[in-house]
Image (cartoon, rainbow, N blue to C red; front, side):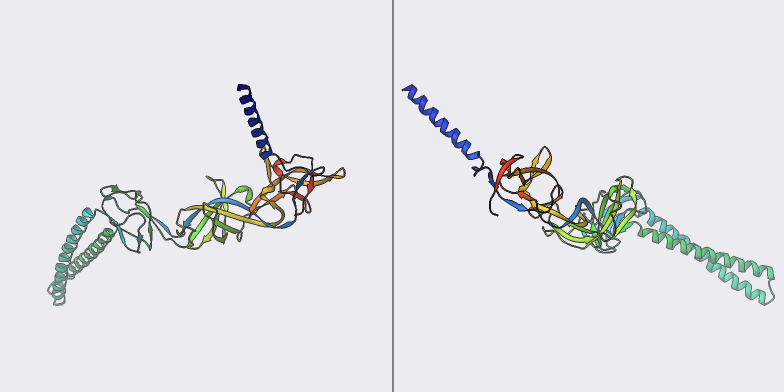
Length: 364
């Protein structure tokens, strides 16, 4: 009974093995080769492109720093707010400047009193001099005192205006309509002219900053088409390069190129924002290149190959040809090198093929 059970199990295992082998086996050969389907290689216009990371920047972007020292006593805006030109964003404690203005106004009033007395004295001395009562010397002294008092008063008036204008520096306002950036400071912080308070970006008149490698310097020029893509490779908009820097950026060892960006929105509905990073596909030129279906590509050891149906010794074989891949266009690869027009590229059963294997063409 035990032997019969072992025999039955052996049969079951053998059946399972045979079934598994049958499932992974290649299509049955017909005659002297494996049946395959092919496509004939033809050349077509294909854009030659390179993809880079681009940074969106606003042509109007202001970094706000105080023009005076002091402690922040109020912050009226928060990051992301849309603000109008002249809108109050922050305020530095103006108490010391208010005291200076009050002192200067008092000085101005004192100078005014001196001037008023000098005017009266000058008019009196003038009348006495014209009546022959006082000397010319006394009249000249009164006139000099009047001129000095007037100059002192005018100087005090201008100093008061200057100190009053200084008060405006304690209020930080938006330079134009825009969006408030990060606010790294807090109420109570001591700030100076080197402290960054925030930024205001006008979310229009945007540009894409693209750093091209130096080896592309000879190809970089105004008018090159650029496709702006989001992180999912969805096209945002098409534009063209309108500026190429004559210098190489030392830190990045790249050449800055700029392309204008309209106030477009991404597929998600979100607008492009200043300092946002996206993809930029630069189209260098259009070339006539062969294209093959993606499924025809076989990769081995980091190299890409296709199988070409080739006549050899009176029979058709699968010849393995190394190819250099270009961009993906729909469900096809552009081939930069390795194929010629008229080559018949095998597109089915490539996982079962080896170099030199006989094949039979099926209708396609």
